[in-house]
Image: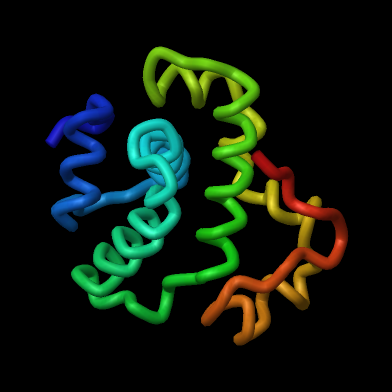
Length: 132
């Protein structure tokens, strides 16, 4: 597969659990695709897809429920503010979403590293997540 897949190939690979590599930018792009294409089921599809990719790689313990839900919320809020033709344009419009530390504005390190946050979504303790 090419280093940067087009939107259709990225989403197909994600939903089929076929991606060998899944970078932070890919996470953001897939979240945008699911926000804009999957309606209300987007978050469920994101959670299921990331869990499947982690399981396929033998990394089930790497799945983090709070990070997944919180990142999806950040992407969904940005997607409502800025229309984009595709996920790469969206990512270019929102360079702040490329910052892996973006959740630090919303969560203390202790809360985000907690077992509770890993296994189920926990609300932020520093600032509320944006809403759609």
